[in-house]
Image 1 (cartoon, helix red, strand yellow):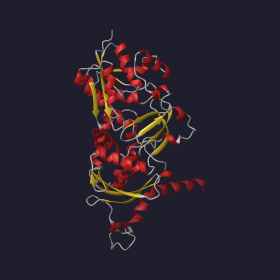
Image 2 (cartoon, one colour; image 1 turned 90 degrees about the horizontal axis):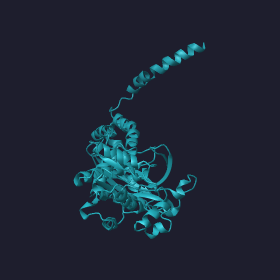
Image 3 (cartoon, helix red, strand yellow; image 1 turned 180 degrees about the vertical axis):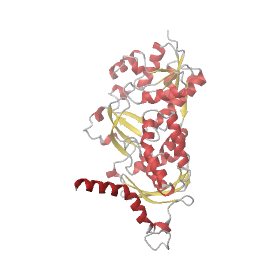
Image 4 (cartoon, one colour; image 1 turned 90 degrees about the vertical axis):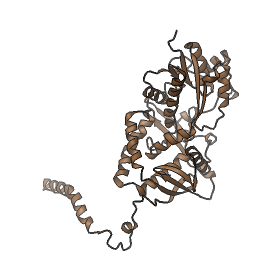
Length: 410
């Protein structure tokens, strides 16, 4: 008999987590609480409630939470203040959703008196690390059940057989072979992995993409968009102030229309293997371009360079599941401090897969001084003679080394 009396399950209502729900009841003989997060994935969530009720979950133990605003405001935007990109390309759409899910799992466990949490991540992936590091950081005494590391249902056929044996509804999509891809979606992105994509030499199928048109099919006319920023976060599009999740959703629409944000990437997973994934991140692609543009006129040079030095470390922390770690929090405090002067607007041109900066300014915090930068007469604002001494001082060590090398040849 297990010592776990109640477990909170991260529950989508799909085949895998429906099997896990029943497996938890059978294997651990425990009460199950289901938690379904609305992160803007665009799917109907009410069926998850119906399926949970079918398997005896008490109504008060079914949590379906709209986390869209919290997700964008408290996780996506702080990450974008750092311009975080993993391995030069990936905008971390899956990675940044996991710490919020872990946070809510632990909150619901405390609310319901549960002593364990459970998830449907496999033992091959990054998500098991992200969920569990987050859970332990927020409740060091929590117990974690990871069925994919315990059971023998390690193939689709075994999952289907278990579902049929236990009366778990299997929709036609799974009966006919399921989706050709493993997909994850939220307001920041949608990802595709598996099946056809497991051959890294094969081009992604045109029918796979969901949010974006191909650049070839995008409108022939460019569209101009103006983003306004306050302390590093976007607050308005074309003069219209929007809530965080509404703003990102609007950028997704604009980017998708113009074929922006597609990515085909082979990444290095935390567990050691290489994995290919395709991603659509239209709004995030626009946002990171705009954010760097407004920083270019408002951040001190060395502060901007320091941020760029720290960014790969910050991105790796998020990718590897360390959002709740003390080092990520420390970096965030520094990054947020740098964003105090990042106020102003950026005008962008969206055209056939491209995001082109077409103007930027800050009325209150711009460090761009036209009287100094001008190619015309600057009326003495900048003394060009000063550059000679500066260059000689910086060249001194190299001149000494060159003289030494020359003597060695003589």
